[in-house]
Image 1 (tube, rainbow, N blue to C red):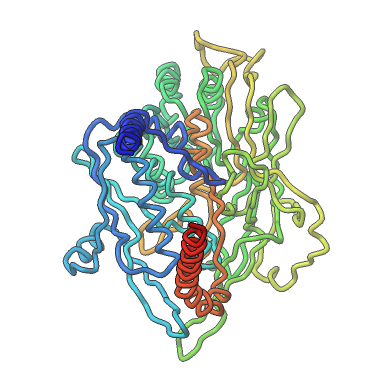
Image 2: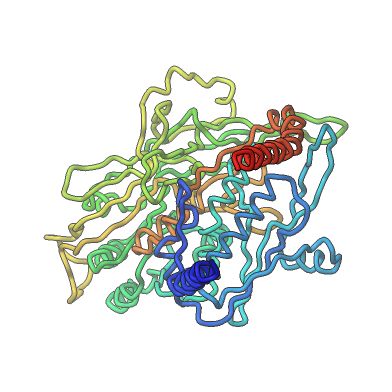
Length: 548
């Protein structure tokens, strides 16, 4: 008998030693939430020094936030198993008043929870943040990002689905060198840095940014083009002044030499601020940038027709006074199309609706260039010509039966071998590297320059994804970041942004109604099972010894 027990013990000891050497974890979840992408693994492989993470999501939370806390801890366990340099700890900032104040000063804004438990409502302050320290650099991680969720459970579900992206994105920013150079065009009336701040700040976390002007084309065209070709991507954000032929040729040859371009164009001049300054009216008129022939050669034709959409973002207007204080009301403004894409393209997948302002339509031409529509108006939209007098009085006379023009293209991805707009034409200046046909290349054209323009409040830029007046949340910044990632072939983080998890929600009303039942069941069921086992065992012994 003792030899038999010894063999069993030896077997389990051997099994334990083998399993320690051949350690393997299996992800049996339906959505593979603990199976990291290749991007995440590549980022973790490059972390060669201790990386410390402080998670301030610690304390006694409601069930939803307990789920977020648990999921955060589990994903960090997986990170630390893949790379031993990753260490983490959970800290309750509410146990130390000074710590809470320090976090607020650092920009870790707390959240206030409204907790309803057994009919009683209370408030609780939490810090849904993590702080990463690596190689002397600090990086914040928002564990509860903004979402379009209508309930707390949906918001938590969204946050959990973004955990891998949030941490991997932070690891990328803090540990990896920037590998692409991006030029932001200046000199043709483009958006200033204050209005591009939100977009460029986020973009600058991944890439090297620099302003670039075409002013020197008139005196040193060859040198200007050589300098431009050194950039991997060019952002052209809402130019308002005409491009000269020499400037257009410079842009054309940049594209022929594999330069990627993100065009944010306004073909119509219209400014919402003018509505307030001119008693609720403004004149929307065509804005000729002298780019039509250039874009025509690439396969599209921008129009000067405004696109109005019944699915629209809101504007905030004064609606009277109460006790001497002005009152405001939000109205759907058809000139601000709100785009929800369902084409499942990596750029638009799983992002919030994108807001456009006074956008025009894009017509496509038949050629060899591949065209992928990224943004389009809803089926309930219409086109109107310009010049056009735009008035707030239109809010009182929206004729829904006239919105019958169907989906209009507002943003498009072009890919292929582009023909030069100056092929067979006299060149504005001599360029020995002239090419009439590009190799495989791509560009994105959006028919609204304001897609990348953030609001200004008290002379400070606000978040591009939020309208601070109406409180609406948008996906403009995510769309633009995805566009840049895609054009540069940097699709790892892009795919992580669109990753979602299928997490079932609890029916809170059912939980409350059946809580007593389950409490009683959890107490009585083990006792009943123990009693049945005791009676069965006694009966078995009695039957066994009765035979002997």
